[in-house]
Amino acid sequence: MDRIRLAGVSKRYFRLGGSKLLARWLFRRSSRGQDWFWSLRDVDLHIPRPGTSLGIIGTNGSGKTTLLRIIAGVTLPTAGTVTVHGRVVSMLELFAGMQPDLTGRENLFLNGILLGMRRREILHKLDSIVEFAGIGEFLDMPFKHYSLGMQMRLGFGLSTHVEASIFLVDEAWGIGDSDFQAKSFRRLRELKRQGVTLILVSHDPEILRQLADETLWLHKGETRAFGPTEKILSSYLQQHPGR
Amino acid sequence: MPSSAHTVQVIRSPRFSYRWCLELLWNLAFQRVHLRYKETFLGFGWIFLQPVALTIIFNYIRRVADIPTGKVPYTLFVAAGLVPWSFTSLAISQSSACIFGNSSLLKRMVFPKILLPLSTILSTMADLLVMAFLLVGLFIYHRFCPSASVLWLPLIFLVHLVLLVGLACLLSLAHVFLRDLGYAIPHLLWLWFFASPVFYPASMVPKEFKGLAVWNPMVGLIEGYRNTLLLGKPPSPDLFLPTIAVSVGMFLLGLTAFRVSEGVLVDML
Image (cartoon, rainbow over all chains, first blue to last red; front, side, top):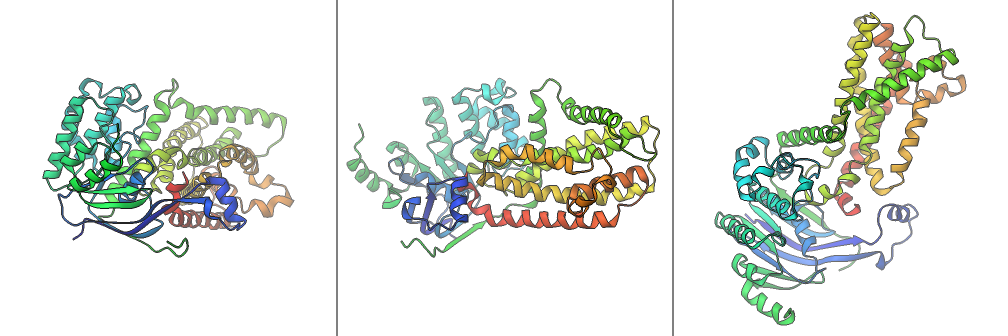
């Protein structure tokens, strides 16, 4: 059975929000082309086997996050077919769901359930999560007093303890120190070995080289290239040499 | 790609399990209650404050304007109207922003979105519980013993709940498209308060407004609560049947609106 299959997936966003959109709809003004923009156009993607990892590369605004959101099921495509078999954990904006006034522990439970875990499961894994995040004595402190690094470690630790078959990772380790980067990298590799499908968005060629079997290069919402990571990376780096 | 006639097909497995949804609902509601009173000094005391203050105010108003309540003590009469009204008012004011206020959650997590309004209603039931204890205390103080007609209470409460769930769904959705609602709702609630027989009996509604008042579900509900709790009568059908109709109508409308807009909701935030 296919893990993930996208066929001709496009996503359109409106430039207008809320009341203006409502007014336009009510008064049946024909919406002109400039009212919306295409964040994603006609993207195909196929991940057949467990344990295959996909890297996504592209400049800012190329539709990487939109693609992850569609796979996660947060938003629906405007056109196309999406098939996803297996539980998805999205590690986009790792701590966006955390409540600043709740303690770390309370946040672990609320967010763990939101990520699809059961309360008993979280209780069972609590020690392991806390140890991974390395926040020990701060567990019962309000989340808002955590440093950015601690917030991220807690979010990362929690997400990677969910029993899911697809993980969407969006530059998750951007803020962490090198110790934590190495630790989270090992954790992702371990998940991959267990047969988890990783989908990684990263600007770091080294990470993609080591974790992604295939890479999708998005450019302005369209597929520029799709294939083995090494091949895609070399042509990407040719066009975007960076520093 | 042509900009019209898009075909969208989404196939996903596994789906949410019901037990997980219930656990999430319970946890969302619990955290709401927890958060609301965590960092305030008075904590749950705030729940008492408004109904107690209003009861005192209305006792004063009664001295000014003559409000006949029969042999029922006026304090009890007002309290029996204020508790259901406070439930409505709290539920509406809390739930109207529940989608907009949780936009960061909705943009990141995948869960049945209807759990948000449902959990706010559930969390205001904690406040209702506290106020119900207050009411029981008043009953004991006035040595007032309700009759067997209280058996109607579960039915009235069910209709009340159905109405609130419907309204919470509709308003929280509307709030996403129309931010103005955030400013309008407190004022609309005050209008609704005076249009509902909280501090006066439903029989005092002026004749020319009677036809209109029948369709205000709070008239039927408050009158129903009072009849069963204080007067030992079942709710009067000519007020209660339209209330059931309005409540069920709101409920169905709210659920339909959620079903229709669930897919595009996140893109509007």
